[in-house]
Amino acid sequence: MVTDERRVSWRRLLHRLTASEAEIEAQELRRESAQCGGTPARQCQRGQLVSVSGRLRTVVYTPRTNLPTLEADLYDGSDVVTLVWLGRRHIAGIEPGRHLTARGRVAVRDDRKVIYNPYYELEPPR
Image 1: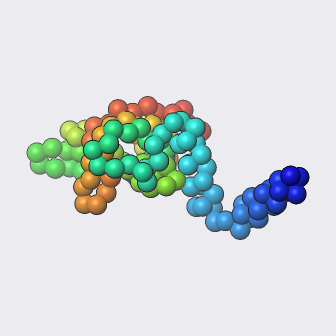
Image 2: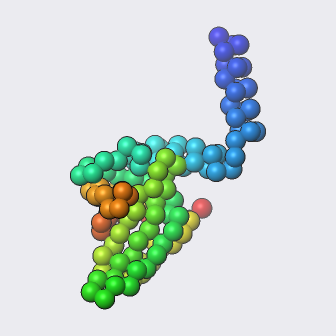
């Protein structure tokens, strides 16, 4: 039993030493998302009502003639879900690097997972 625990700890240490910074960050985001009770973005399917938690990678305002949109890519360590707020130019607190939990129904647009006008909760800045 003790030797198995040592092997596991050695493997974990070896992985931490050899993993890239992106891999370590993705692991941490997956762990944090699981702690928040979020559905992993990789498992989200079209039409499913989900709660996803992660970090905003990009936030883009898209001016359109008839309906402006604010789009943000939420990364949880497994995949990206694009959050789209229709008719919005800016939302206070929605900025790259910010952690949040979003809830809504998943749609697919251009082979990307999208949640339109999600309910969201901003997490305190870290």
